[in-house]
Length: 198
Image (cartoon, rainbow, N blue to C red):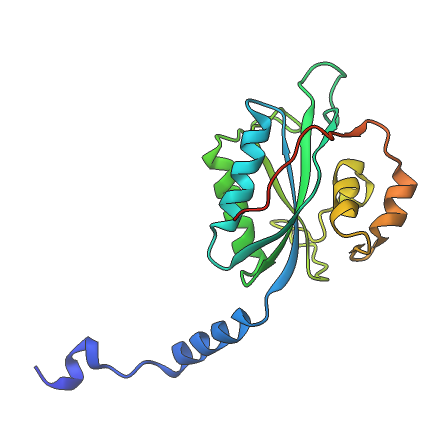
């Protein structure tokens, strides 16, 4: 076997070197992401905390802030037909691109046996990417910012708590949007607290 036919001594293609170098640069340049969490089945607090911990354990993701917990009535269904939700928002710094972060969000949902057979159906956990930097995208796989976040108090209220100066790309300041939507049906649970991962 000549040295050149041994795959272990082949030169690394320039494209791979470039990718590695590019990845190394992005490690020093993490992006901001906002993720909304919601649960209305099972041990809701345990599930929310588990999702936060799973995000923190994701390579290339750091959880920087966790909002207070809010209790809200389910959206788009008959009142009283489902348990109420516990909602929270987490702020991330990540070197993952939006698509990879979405894959991780879906993996966390699947780990908690999230069922997707009914729109606005009850769920053990909802992990939604609300915003990623200032990206505006109408990609059907991942629309950014989340297409309804600017009109939902259960996202805006906890987001405002952890980042009062935040803006929804293309829609304006979270504070103004929350003022327009109001806080009806969204109750802050002072007796509940999620913790930032160690």
